[in-house]
Length: 286
Image (cartoon, rainbow, N blue to C red; front, side):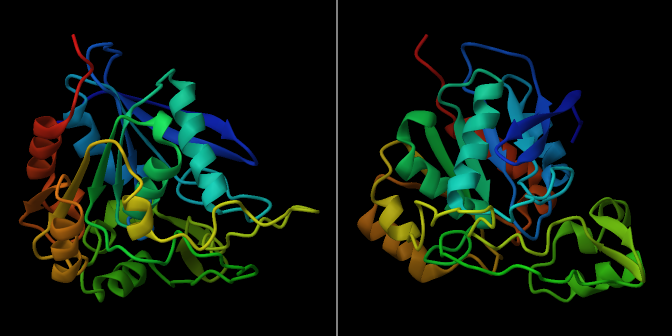
C-alpha cells in the first residue's frame, strides 16, 4: 500500500498538546474522516497506510490520544471521557470540519459510540472497527494514579511480551514500529503512553466528577442517530458472536462488515479495510 504525503502538527486541547497526522487535500464534496486509535495499538503511526489510502479522495486525520505517542501526558491525569470528547471536537475544529465521519478501533470503538451518542451534531457517520461492547475502558469511572511503567530491558523483550497476547499488535512483529512506541528510561525501555492513562478523575485542584461516567456502550448505541457500520475481524478475539447477534436483533439498521483478520486489522488487512470504508462512506449531497 502506497503511503500518501502527510503533514503533521499539534492541537492544544485542554491541558494537553495533541499530535496529529493529516492526509489528503480539502475537498468540500467529500466527507473527511477522523480515525481514533486503540489502547494497545499505540498511536497514529499504526494507521498511516490506511489513512493515506483513504485520503486519495478525502482528508483523513489520525491523532495520538492524550497520554499516547507524541501527544503530551495530561499533567492533571485527566483521561476522562469528557476530556477525550473535547479532544475529538478540538481536532475537528482545527481543520474546520463540522461533521466528519468518525472511525474508532478497539477501545476507541466504544469511545466513538459514546461520542456519536452524546455529540450527534459533531459527526455524520460512525464506523466501529473491531471492538467488544459493554462497560469498561473507556466508560467506567476509574481513579488510578501513580502507576509505574513496565520496564523492558530491550526492545525485543517488549516485542516478546506483546507477542504472547492472543491477538498481538504490529508492535510485536515489527521492530521499527516497536522502537517508535518506546522511550528510554533507567533500566531499559517503557511505552510512550502514560501508565495512568486509564485514570478518569482529573487531579487538578478542585476538579469535580466528570460529566460522563459509568456509561454503557449498548445504551449509547441506542441513542446514535447517524449511520453506523461495524467492521469485525473474523479471527479477532473481539469478534464475540453474542454481541453481533444482539446487534442484528436490536439494531437492524446497523451495517456489519467482516474482514479476514485478527484484531489488528489496520496491519493485517489494510486493503480490505480501506475497500470497505471507500464503499460505505457517505458524502454530502452534491
